Amino acid sequence: MLLQLKSKINKILVSAIFLFSAFLFHGCTAPGILATGAGSTMVIAEGDKTLGDTIDDATIKLNISAKFLSSNKNLFLNIDIKVTEGRVLLTGIVQEQETRIEAVRRVWEVSGVKEVINEIEVGDKKTLKEYANDVWITAQVKSVAAKNLGLRALGYNFETIRGKVFIAGITSRKDQLDLLIQSIETVKGVKDIVNYVVVKE
Image (cartoon, rainbow, N blue to C red; front, side, top):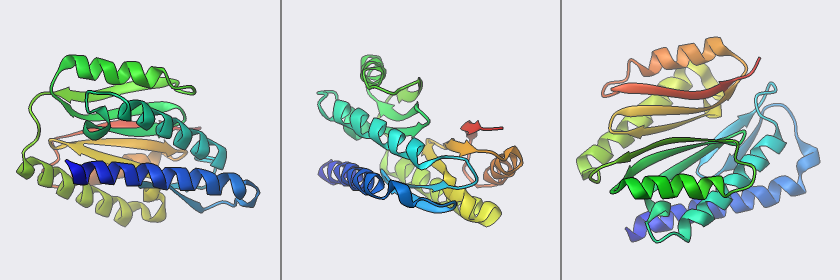
């Protein structure tokens, strides 16, 4: 539990550092720049996601994390947050339905949130074996994504819960997204794929 808490706090600190750096160097952007924040790497390229979008999303995530941290229902430890253009994807496992509702309520309190996608499961905590399996699946998904899409694979976020793979991100190329989904389907242990990628024309 303590290790998990430290890991989450480290992610928030990385986001804060990224935000500060981004504001300082906002005028120094270029296509293909890599922006790191909240434990994941986003690619800002080909008009998929501007630096401004990334800063706004990182701010929203920081504010949601603060809301979760102040909760007495362990929201901060049990729920993962992904933000894309104000769309918030929540994943994780909680013990009670009331906790799931509380998480959504707190997200809507944050300025800039346009949509909340609630994929939080209610049930028993995952066993260590289930957790290790999900970590392995996520690693394999990232590997096949990199193999098929190259650097652009960094523009997507992946989360696996009990064999169900959630994809979030933004792209201007639906053909690449289709290729990504097809490649994920080949990964052993994947039971379902939930696609929350925004496709921009």
